[in-house]
Length: 125
Image (cartoon, rainbow, N blue to C red; front, side, top):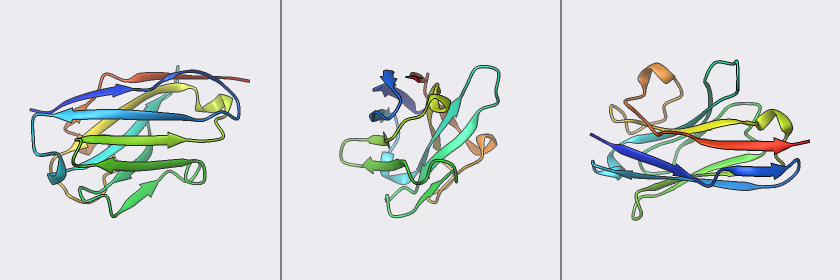
């Protein structure tokens, strides 16, 4: 069992930055892949970014790779999502996710074993 708790969401203006954090517990954090997804009202959950268990490999959705950065601190059991130059269309609930089956990167919701409860990011235009 893995518990994931996100934090760092909030209301910002377009062009601002935010850093989301996700604290994991329950299993050895450095053994599995982590990812961020988001879901806007009325839309499907979409992939944002992924990071391998070591932190060496990263993968981003094309529309976000120039503005978002995923990272992890295995000593703190935490994964981060740094979001810069935020746009109105980035408004969504952001979820961190764990795939215990791989040490690589994971970008498919169907492969996720555990989800956090989500944190709301609202960008005003």
